[in-house]
Length: 236
Ligand code: OAD
Image 1 (tube, rainbow, N blue to C red):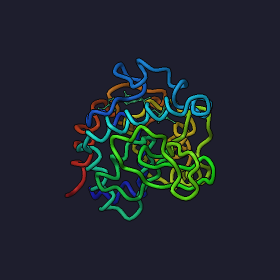
Image 2 (image 1 turned 180 degrees about the vertical axis):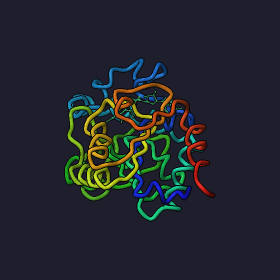
Image 3 (image 1 turned 135 degrees about the vertical axis):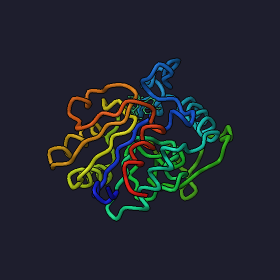
Image 4 (image 1 turned 45 degrees about the horizontal axis):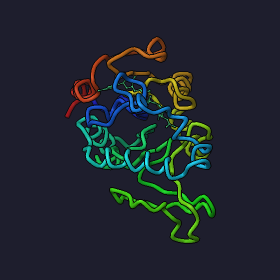
């Protein structure tokens, strides 16, 4: 069978795809938030109250992720993208490991740890400095206070990214859902939109999720191993 048989392919990933790279997931037993209440740190409210504390938290996350490499699952998705004309990767992850693996047709629904945004003028820029200096980051254009360009718990997603993700999901013929607990909206709705549009849904996750019952195939196991087996179904 040719890999073209799954085209247009849309892939939705979550923290689980980066777990084997050493990035903690949000809700697993090793979850990122075990020692932190997320809403205490990842919110507009928290940033207004104590920007230094929030920046310390993000500096820690950046240092942690900077030590991690893309794993086989990230690389396989980049390979699949190279083989397909109609492909879209939608990720909830902010770690940048998909780009590091070579993915290009990528929608980062929740932003990126490696992007900053000015709270005054809205300017966005890339910043890869690790570790971050102690001084609060400032905008290179207007010297306004910078913030991480990620979506916080009390914030809405960027409407243009959501629209792009919805369009991709609606036109998918196959949707692979890899390593997400499928609990956070609107990302969790994308597979259902794809299904409504006639797509075949395939879930890759060691555990069942609220989405599992809707899927045409549920492949239990770690993303690296299961995705490799899935790719082997197709002609090289
Ligand atoms: P979660 O931490 O909620 O879920 C991680 C999922 O990965 C779970 O279903 C695990 O079973 C699965 N998993 C663990 N190890 C895996 C492996 N080796 N291979 C495949 N799957 C594995 O993470 P997300 O679903 O990404 O949002 O969470 C969604 C959003 O919740 C995040 O983007 C974040 C958080 O609030 C924001 O920060 C806006």
